[in-house]
Length: 599
Image (cartoon, rainbow, N blue to C red; front, side, top):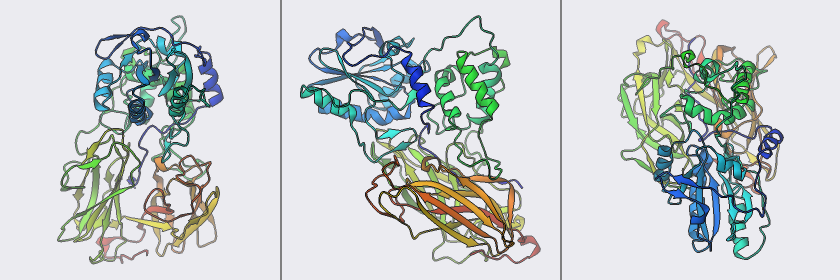
């Protein structure tokens, strides 16, 4: 049965984490890194407007921040406003310059970066990454703070609010700001060096002309990227950079190797010991080894005649022209420049005079730069139930890489007459004010062609009371299937304290089967999991969901480990919901078989 899961919500930026830090740092230290007390290296670069710049241009009475940046690095975009505020607050003492050493970032892209983020400090292009090498910089945004004598007093991270795929409400340690204040007070900073989280600088990679190269971009790597990555990593999609062109890919080679080695990308969290899922995007061991071999060889292009035909993607509505389109508001919705926003909910009346049978639905994100995910539900309060069929209050969702809802012939979801659509939108500010006007389109099907109703059901535990500081709070919930059913897909949902989630089927004969095990739940990449073959759940089967929460200080994203946490809509509250999509096995509307509810 062809069925595509549409309940995926995903991360608002590149969700990567440290490779093997010991190996990475060992690699970084092979590069001569500035030490505390060293003077700023001499250099001469041009900015994106063609103006020459050297340290001699700096104000000799001020401290200087040199920040290495990349135009597509998500962490850089988060930190640009913080750096601007720091300089503004210390305008009499502080100046800043930005250096871009990424081989994949063009002058034109740097100019757009400066314009979009309203950057007014010098932004310099380091075309052969010689300045990055002289400083020993490895990632963006890495900062180097020099006193008025151009002596290094601090090197590393700006603060600890953001890391790979995670963020805090506010920083616990403001390393750079504290170092600036210390030297203003003519003191030595308490913290002089920290490790920097962020994107690996896209250096020009050396290639051994005499080496016998087996793996090239043209012959192997482009095919892996086309198969696994470019659905999201292409122009106009939510991923922060494109992987459709060699000149762009080569600058991300080191980062690509890091995230696939650590299985951060493509994002997938199911334990492979349980279940087979048709939407599993993980790379094979062979594919990972090919990427590592390619990077080690200097990321060679190879013979362009070997390049595969690029994959084709439909422009506009991927489901074809919708029968009806709804937008979240009449006018673009404003998103502030900074902060962590709670989910925004928009209610839109359908004014349907009759029940509508939905075979396809697609969410069109209005502003991919700030929209983390959109879920469209249907509220039928005050309207009549739909024919007694299995219901689906959750219609569809949108996330990077996800496809629209396109149900197979004979399947449909239902929107009752008079129902109201509810858009849940997660916005992630990017440092500048933005607007959004996301929409959803539906394609209808005649009820006479529908045999089974697709429902999105849930198992939920709303009686949550997670103690302050508790790292292993366990809870569970269950429901019994009242009719023979076919489970199509699962979608576990928790918030920032979610640690793990498991679905188990307890069959009437007493046999237990783990349907899905997510040992490391990630709020920022809330995958859905679609069975290769629908799972038959006989009448009387219990669907058991077990979840673990981490409310301790060791949970990076925990907004406040000193507080007990209960159920709530905001991400600072918690939820425990095991959604699943299903149809009734015995239902056939065209044969007049009873359409019974599973309530």
